[in-house]
Length: 545
Image (cartoon, rainbow, N blue to C red; front, side, top):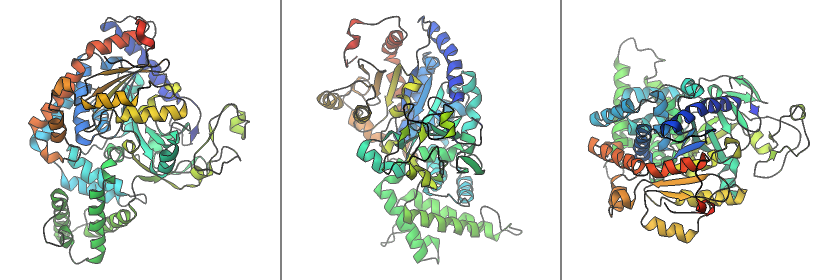
């Protein structure tokens, strides 16, 4: 979808439909290698949960072992939230070469390298944008430090292997933070936002723009100002911004920039609390380096005043970040649905509404057969969207693969949570119940029992809808009685500096083991959905493998 117009249509975008169709041929070949004969390729989706750096490393381990076992080639969709999106995007930037990807990961955490100067330069450059927000700061100065990466490629660069069908179709999740009240009240599907190599938009509304035009300015459905496509570093920050909502970070950033306004004599004064001791050491060191870098650059002769690292641009960055911190503004981008009108019918309510195929046409485009039009003045009146980590809604992207248009038959849900590994199942069950979406129903008492000593694999089945295989990262099969110790070692809020090579390798091995030990169960369910084998008890609402 390279169009400069907004697309509002039901069903899959044509580019995704073509890519998925091409992928079917590769899936059939993969099934044959796994000794599963099928006339039609079942649609399998692999989901990765959030969990920061822990999820990033564990998801890489899962993908690596699935590739090793021949399972990844049987997958149609890869979808992730937060830290898992960092891993999934790396798969495509490395052309699916898991050996090289794993080697690069180990190299990054062996040398503990982080290019501060380049990260600073990218942040100051981002601050020139009218839509600069804390997400830019978070992406270039925090996430890049956590992952030891600063990728400059783009989602659109992933098109080739996806369109050829050699890799699964990737979906990266976010939510519209402005619609959080609707989510809290009614679990509104319209809250969810997705990114693919082809498009970005609201799947529940069928409203998308080309990924190359995400962030550009639209009005009345047409492109009015083009902005460069955002790089993967920024998008990773957007997808993984849940940590930005924690109170400790909020208080620190707000206090830091508030004191910047009150005391402009020296940025160094901002690095200490009232007692004179540094707070949040790594952020403190970061700011010290920022100040030193900028001042040193000012002493250089023939310094270009427009240079990204100049003091004037640095102070503009400080000012803008201070304003964003005071507003606590994240994920700001132009609303591509601004002033977009599919017809004159609007509803005066908080929730967004779709014009379904049974509704009378209200515009020429609908009369021509285009349904799914938006008729909500709140959505079309907002100049900006504020997109944040989807983990703030559900920490696994179930809502993006459950729509019937994607026809998913089997979901492999890898949960990298450090807490209750069934919270995503609870949340998704509630979401699906509210919206009459087929999803396996599990009793709360059973989930409570499982969460006390989680096994490595659960198979959930309903009378209709996809089969769900749920894989807790920390489980009694792999961790024995040390689940709590494992969770503490890989706490979500631990910084990258605590991840030594040994710590990284252990987590990779654990994630791989969970796949390897459950390969037979995965193959059995692949056979089931391929139509070759249906056990007598398949109609049971839920069964534990």
